Length: 197
Ligand SMILES: O=c1[nH]c(=O)c2ncn([C@@H]3O[C@H](COP(=O)(O)OP(=O)(O)OP(=O)(O)O)[C@@H](O)[C@H]3O)c2[nH]1
Ligand SMILES: [Mg+2]
Image (cartoon, rainbow, N blue to C red; front, side, top):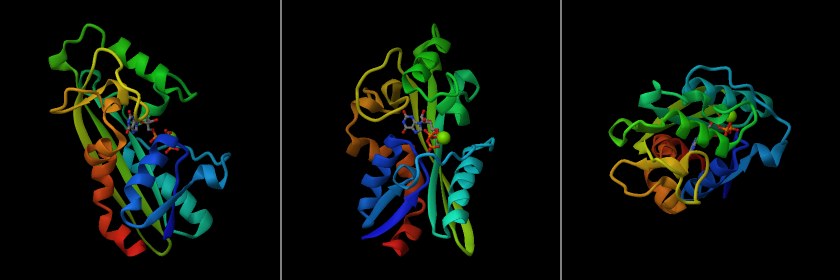
């Protein structure tokens, strides 16, 4: 089984990459296995820019292929916020619960019909001596009035995927991994993943 580095410290993402890469016979190493003190500044203004920054920074240090994910939630009624700032919406310290509470507060009084949102994920593959690949996947849905469910991470307890009647956090990990923004982005790097196994 081949091992790939995913340049993330987010445990929720790491679990999902592990599950989704296993079908390609690829095991996942993350920054948590490498050196927890690594801190890559996300200076981009788009998901794609930040994913490329994270993947290329580690590829240049280690001279191996590196995958990275930059993702977040876009809410139409908030003009696309929190967007690329999803991880630090409620402050620099990452706190999923505070982020989610701030989101609900900002949407207070906004009716169901105007709570459309989408999860976005850009996945980048930086390769020594070859062009960087970057692909985007999305998952459309809407924001619930209150958190429900305990699976997943981040905003999953308040995100209802389009056509579903439960939040993403009420979906099992297998269910989420079939419909998520991350799934749709990874699907687009499938040909490259198959060359790695
Ligand atoms: O409910 C969610 N389900 C998801 O599937 C999901 N994917 C992303 N997000 C949110 O967007 C931020 C990413 O920001 P982000 O890409 O900078 O990641 P991060 O800072 O957490 O880790 P790293 O990969 O940068 O190390 C995360 O923290 C979450 O708040 C999600 N929320
Ligand atoms: Mg980050």
